[in-house]
Length: 395
Image (tube, rainbow, N blue to C red; front, side):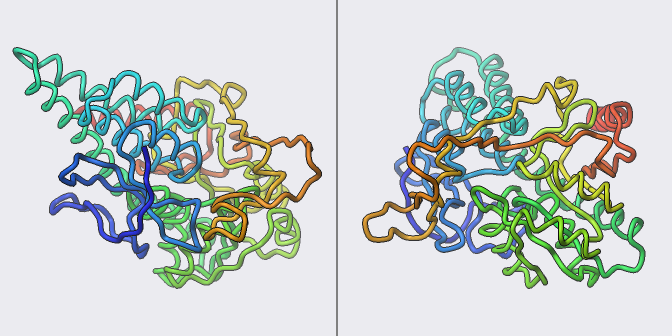
């Protein structure tokens, strides 16, 4: 189950070297109170009005938190999935059932399944290496799953820093002289990462280097992750930012006010097709027409070489009420539960609500990963980078 409570603090241990952020409450942390281990999440559905935490005491509570977008963003979902397996193991739940439920909670986000399977593999290996069976072996296996989750958390923080470095260098190469005006879509900052994010981390690096003139923030309908979350992070970091409705982006391009587009990704297919928050593909078309670089920033764990192309990516379809109602993330209004909706369409209206769209590789200027930049984006260049990363990791 998942209970709400407000608290600050974190579970970053000495030596873990997880990147600090300016957000008061970590997006995710593992805690071990006397009554048993829990996974604590910053409830992103309540931002920016309130900083409220969810305490997950079982895998099903985490599954619900993932589906409701209380925890979201490709890299963070991978971390959450790994911790979810550790939680199941530590509390005596069926690890296989928990892993399957977690991995399937959001089908487009490949990082989620990656994190789940990585922790599950560590758990299985520890079980197989145990002698005599019993509680001691189960305890060691649960500890192995937790170690795998913590390692993934730390690796993602390091990857975030490297992506920011590579991304800023690319921006400076494409747009000499600084003074960048960058458009971003959805939320790709510390709220989706073990570190400072993916695409947002690049913009933040430009800001810190004095080379960001303006961050244009798409509100990102229907759930307003840009308005609620990216603007929240930009404000806390003192960045110069402006919020716009998604359908205002075209006029911004036409006015010559966008120098580059920076987005994240939830899955990158083997051919370089990019699945990201719905609304990304139209930005890529606009960027191509206006000769503006369209840059995708994502860790290599988001690349799925088993998905051959964009047409093979399963796109999550979400509930119609997200479109037919305006959600209320703040504290309850009279007669309305927190997180409920105000109807904006006639009763019974059907809604088309894909969570993601797919941008073909020919519209992507570059993919920035922690291992370097892929440009031009082709299946061959992407596969070569993945192969090189595996060789370095294994050596």
